[in-house]
Image (cartoon, rainbow, N blue to C red; front, side, top):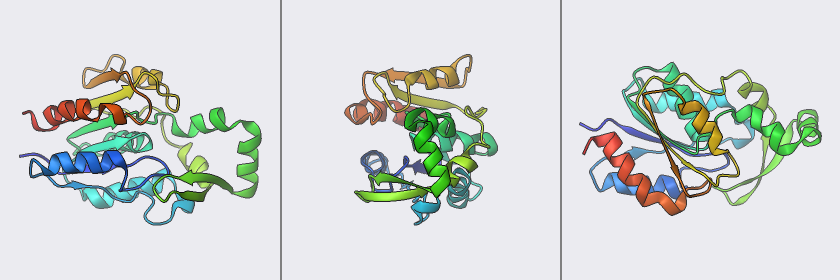
Amino acid sequence: MIPPVIYLHGFASGPGSKKARYFARRFAEMGVTVEVPDLAAGNFETLTITGQLHVIERVAAGRGVVLMGSSLGGYLAALYAARHPETERIVLMAPGFGFARRWPETLGAGTMAEWRRTGWLPVFHYGEKAQRRVGYALISDGAQYEEYPPVTQPCLIYHGRRDDVVPVEASIEFAAGKANVDLRVEDSDHELLDVLDVMWEGVRRFVTGL
């Protein structure tokens, strides 16, 4: 029997993301329902890593599940699996390892200081297709979590070699020396939308054994 599948969307995205809808449809063709929670729980401004992990805990409800995650959702899947051994398998797509550390590298010291001072950062929310703001607690809370969670479950990773958001080297470092991790580097970017069918074939076999 195929375990319950939970899909975790990326930062400033939502349950209606293209990859979430694609994988939900493909699994539905096999009679498998995919749960896609809103990781912000309706309040993007107060988004934190801890809060998102609590959302996953509520949805998983102690069950042995398969977690699929994209970008930040991939990092969250790894964090959750490392803390919940009942998690059966995880599929990570361009996982955002080192999430809190990479913000200063991307934004620069000045913008980070202003974010810390005001408490808010304006970002474009792809799920809502509008400008939103997110609190600095996303960073202060996220700093307590390890960059590379010690996952022991079977783990399948897809990462684009042309990813300019989360460099593929992050997944290479995570996978190094781990027999439980299958890293597949595709000729794609961070979104991986042009290799959906390729990923589905791998995901289907990984999750179902078929």
